[in-house]
Length: 100
Image 1 (tube, rainbow, N blue to C red):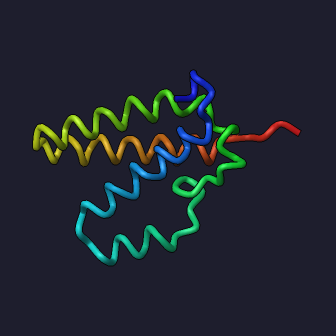
Image 2 (cartoon, helix red, strand yellow; image 1 turned 180 degrees about the vertical axis):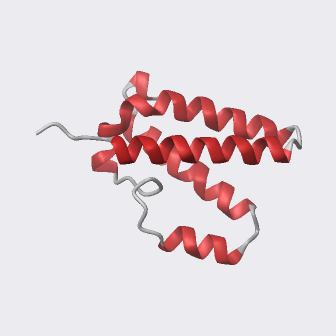
Protein backbone atom coordinates (compact mmCIF):
# COMPACT_ATOMS: atom_id res chain seq x y z
CA UNK A 1 0.00 0.00 0.00
CA UNK A 2 2.72 2.45 0.94
CA UNK A 3 4.59 1.95 -2.32
CA UNK A 4 1.41 3.05 -4.12
CA UNK A 5 1.02 6.09 -1.88
CA UNK A 6 -1.79 4.74 0.32
CA UNK A 7 -0.26 5.90 3.59
CA UNK A 8 -3.53 6.26 5.49
CA UNK A 9 -4.71 2.87 4.22
CA UNK A 10 -1.51 1.19 5.40
CA UNK A 11 -1.88 2.70 8.85
CA UNK A 12 -5.53 1.68 9.09
CA UNK A 13 -4.74 -1.85 7.86
CA UNK A 14 -2.10 -2.16 10.58
CA UNK A 15 -4.50 -0.98 13.28
CA UNK A 16 -7.24 -3.28 11.98
CA UNK A 17 -4.90 -6.28 11.94
CA UNK A 18 -4.01 -5.86 15.59
CA UNK A 19 -7.61 -5.21 16.56
CA UNK A 20 -8.71 -8.43 14.85
CA UNK A 21 -5.95 -10.46 16.51
CA UNK A 22 -7.01 -9.15 19.93
CA UNK A 23 -10.69 -9.83 19.18
CA UNK A 24 -9.90 -13.36 17.96
CA UNK A 25 -8.25 -14.14 21.29
CA UNK A 26 -11.71 -14.07 22.85
CA UNK A 27 -10.34 -12.50 26.02
CA UNK A 28 -12.49 -9.58 27.19
CA UNK A 29 -9.80 -8.27 29.59
CA UNK A 30 -7.23 -8.24 26.80
CA UNK A 31 -9.70 -6.50 24.47
CA UNK A 32 -10.47 -3.79 27.04
CA UNK A 33 -6.78 -3.31 27.83
CA UNK A 34 -5.98 -2.96 24.12
CA UNK A 35 -8.83 -0.53 23.51
CA UNK A 36 -7.87 1.68 26.45
CA UNK A 37 -4.09 1.54 26.24
CA UNK A 38 -2.17 4.62 25.31
CA UNK A 39 0.79 2.82 23.83
CA UNK A 40 2.00 4.64 20.69
CA UNK A 41 3.03 1.30 19.22
CA UNK A 42 -0.63 0.37 18.85
CA UNK A 43 -2.18 3.75 18.31
CA UNK A 44 -0.05 5.80 15.97
CA UNK A 45 -2.24 8.65 14.83
CA UNK A 46 -2.91 8.88 11.13
CA UNK A 47 -1.14 12.25 11.03
CA UNK A 48 1.99 10.61 12.41
CA UNK A 49 1.80 7.55 10.20
CA UNK A 50 4.12 9.06 7.57
CA UNK A 51 6.89 9.15 10.17
CA UNK A 52 6.84 5.34 10.21
CA UNK A 53 6.53 4.64 6.48
CA UNK A 54 9.85 2.78 6.30
CA UNK A 55 8.38 0.30 8.77
CA UNK A 56 5.32 -0.72 6.77
CA UNK A 57 7.09 -3.07 4.37
CA UNK A 58 8.38 -5.12 7.30
CA UNK A 59 5.01 -4.82 9.02
CA UNK A 60 3.13 -6.21 6.03
CA UNK A 61 5.58 -9.11 5.67
CA UNK A 62 5.27 -9.94 9.37
CA UNK A 63 1.47 -9.72 9.31
CA UNK A 64 1.33 -12.11 6.36
CA UNK A 65 3.61 -14.60 8.17
CA UNK A 66 1.42 -14.44 11.29
CA UNK A 67 -1.75 -15.03 9.27
CA UNK A 68 -0.11 -17.93 7.39
CA UNK A 69 0.86 -19.57 10.70
CA UNK A 70 -2.68 -19.11 12.05
CA UNK A 71 -4.20 -20.59 8.90
CA UNK A 72 -1.86 -23.57 9.22
CA UNK A 73 -2.96 -23.91 12.87
CA UNK A 74 0.67 -23.46 13.91
CA UNK A 75 -0.38 -21.45 16.94
CA UNK A 76 2.94 -21.54 18.80
CA UNK A 77 4.70 -20.29 15.67
CA UNK A 78 2.07 -17.57 15.24
CA UNK A 79 2.51 -16.48 18.86
CA UNK A 80 6.29 -16.34 18.45
CA UNK A 81 5.96 -14.34 15.22
CA UNK A 82 3.54 -11.95 16.91
CA UNK A 83 5.89 -11.48 19.86
CA UNK A 84 8.79 -10.73 17.50
CA UNK A 85 6.59 -8.34 15.50
CA UNK A 86 5.52 -6.40 18.58
CA UNK A 87 9.08 -6.34 19.91
CA UNK A 88 10.39 -4.95 16.62
CA UNK A 89 7.63 -2.34 16.58
CA UNK A 90 8.42 -1.36 20.14
CA UNK A 91 12.10 -0.94 19.28
CA UNK A 92 11.21 1.16 16.21
CA UNK A 93 8.96 3.48 18.21
CA UNK A 94 11.39 3.87 21.10
CA UNK A 95 14.34 4.55 18.80
CA UNK A 96 12.41 6.86 16.45
CA UNK A 97 13.67 10.40 16.26
CA UNK A 98 11.83 13.12 14.42
CA UNK A 99 13.77 15.62 12.39
CA UNK A 100 13.51 19.18 13.66
